[in-house]
Image (cartoon, rainbow, N blue to C red; front, side, top):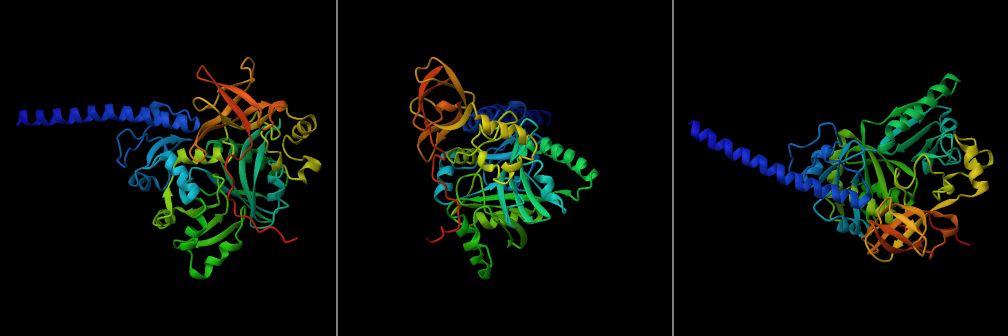
Length: 443
């Protein structure tokens, strides 16, 4: 009997040792995929993951999990740490295939790691306009806009979508990686304003998930799970607008927006109904699950900023090419945090500008690759995001260059791990946008 148990113990020991070895190899591969896909720093000590839909004992218990975690695992999601969450980087298809499918059909992303909140009260708009650059008061009810939270120096604390549900209710979505600092910033000013008599309160929607259905087939797919008498609402439901729709037996807040450059919807759904909604959507053959990898490829092709890479608290809206987010009415008074600095930056002009780049030869230019003058002798800037474009079949990037070199067609060099390659400044977005907008008025 003793010999029998020793034999079993040897088998178990060998199995565990083999799995540790294989898991280590897959960890390394996933880290490289993540780093090369979108410049994330993923450390081996906190990389708990799931490969091919099978749980491993290396899952990091400290990572938060969305309601759909088991759903991702079941569908073969490769899970990696991102902003303190365990999130799928990809599924069974490649990042290239997933990116292309979103451009031709539609993809479903779990973006529940992002933070949704509501500001309510008679002074909600007045309060938020002290912190962001957008003209929130000028929005129609049920309409939102991309805006920027700025600091006292006019730098970008975060980029966010703010929707004016009504004159006394704002719905705000902030980035997962900025959640803690954003909430601390908002609550600090909220306390000050409430003490001064402002009627405004905050509510976090941590009881809801957020799903993003993106791609040219998104409207068709969403319409397929709407009641027959509700399908027509999508015809006049335009980019930037928000509606409350009944989906999979639950009241959902649906915003026609996204982070891919395609038509699509971001759907806030109560946790209890999230799985049913996800299953209803992926049952459609024109939908595939997609993870962080293709999400980054898509936003790079669309010329959209990734906070922490392309913009941060040292970047001004002028430098980032985001001056359009500063509402016309707001430019009259610049009465938001850091407004005087933004006004000065507009008057003086930015010394550097964010530009698109096409790498004409060599390997992809990743974050922190140095940009050089055309003769390769002078360092003139830096790449902030870069990778292979599955749709353009070219290496593309974004970065900052002196204002004098921002014109499309300008030839430069880039240093990629010691090798000098040719690059050219290009207009963004790199691929045409597919946003669903109202028809142009007849002349």
